[in-house]
Length: 378
Image (cartoon, rainbow, N blue to C red; front, side, top):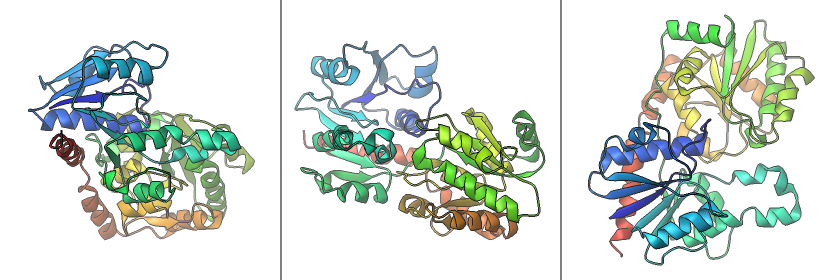
């Protein structure tokens, strides 16, 4: 079996959730599968050593660089699939070539429906156009992988035409290899590096964009700080996405500009210590497909204050402190609980044990099973 993998966004300078998913999946497929042939499609030449990192020394992995011709997906990639057909084509982004060989089985990963929170989605005409690439990918694919039952149900509840519910497969994501609870020495180094100081802090990590609800989180934090008789900071890590300006201006609006620290994107090696040193991980997102940072927090044995949205509940079960992301008082009370009445060590340990069920090896194995099930029908 020959499998083509879309690696277009793997070379992003500041990888976010979809890039993290793609990198970890490809690496674990390379470690797991020594039988099938794989080719990864790039839109530029990868840096020296990068592909060796992905392929883990598997000789069955190769790559091709496809220069952009008008549209990389719909022209460059499509032409390659016709010129050198594969049995399976997999993409972890929401777009699929308009034209592709009929014999090639197509698998797409839909991370979520984040587009609902883009600025363009407020425009009536754009509201009709923006979902089309996702709809086309779902309709065109032979199998659709989603990271949670919540995402699957949200898509099906759209009642889009020609969408076959039997094509969906839920495959949970995993814990990055470098994530583990760190010791006090590493935490002290991170506190010094990012000028956090000695005070307790809440930690948020994700791309800053409207659906992450960062402004509401900061407002609730400001109210909690006013009630607390102790110093507390909010450390925000994440690259700037779209419409991030309001989040950056919110601390000054509520008088906590000296207590909110924006780190921008932080390298992966710093993340475990940032989690481990935090009083709590906080994320009051309005929309998620899965929630890798929630898993990371549980691995680092950090209590969590998170939205009561279905994807988080599916992952976190009864272990986090849940809040209503649309209610500032609810978020504030969650922060107060984490600081004044933190969850017990027994609950922390159970959360950690639960997090160990999510591995990238399992993600790769389940994905490979989907590939193999399609090939049987060729």
